[in-house]
Image (tube, rainbow over all chains, first blue to last red):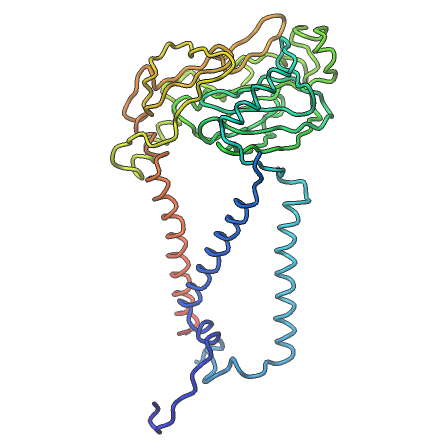
Length: 50
Length: 348
């Protein structure tokens, strides 16, 4: 609640993400961790039995 | 002074971006996708990496495949001549089953790579061009089918490049690439002095360690082992409890104990591996004489603190700490970099 009694408009989440280096760093780590895990799982599951 | 990269006030995300900015972002996005595709495509089609089919095969079954290969191959003085273009290599502590082999130059072979116990390396170098090397890995439980064609004749040395135990440095074998395979099979080209079809002929076909360019040493304690032990002690700590999958295979074609007559009490707590060729890791003949490279295990005769400690480096604990240290360092450096830049640019 602002001093004039008007609720300031909340910033959209992409803006919050881009304005916070810590949030951005966390998102980057999460993205690449998940990407590599999923990539690894796909690799493992696609190996044929010999 | 106001920083040019300070965020505008209020909700800037919902504002319509300038057309030039949209175009610039679009171009950057497209270019990054091109680079990504380039990297992936180069790996697959650029013939720069060893690619090939991988199969999931239990070690016992893979051992059977290598045995079948040895049975079907023609035994010559210079090694096994494969019946077709498939060459099976089974790595184990501390030898390469299926080698030495003799193959033909210019023919594309499918090398089947797998191991019977732990992870090993398949580092291949031609004796006259030791700087050229390929270094695939061999994993237990998997069979890697790798297409290989050799243009240069001569003896190729194979060493394990993945630390696999106290006898790792002795893990060596050879295969030979010749112009005319039929001459080898018929025996007309076998043992015809050192000047066979290989390389400059000066020392081809001689599998003795003299050929080896110093990869082997007579230092039974292994200088490199000391470094590994030191790192392992720092990272591992505690006492090694033999949790490595060290069970050695027992059903090779000819079971013969290694010549040092060990009683099987290696520091890793596992049975000592036997080699299929009578305790000799690699044999190759030249001039009718067979040169042999003996398998010796320094850990059996005199286990010392650093040999024991070397196992710490291989234990899960050390590896685990290592994997934490690397991303941890990255995160700290990245954050510090961001912090310093934010001070410089007056951001945040």
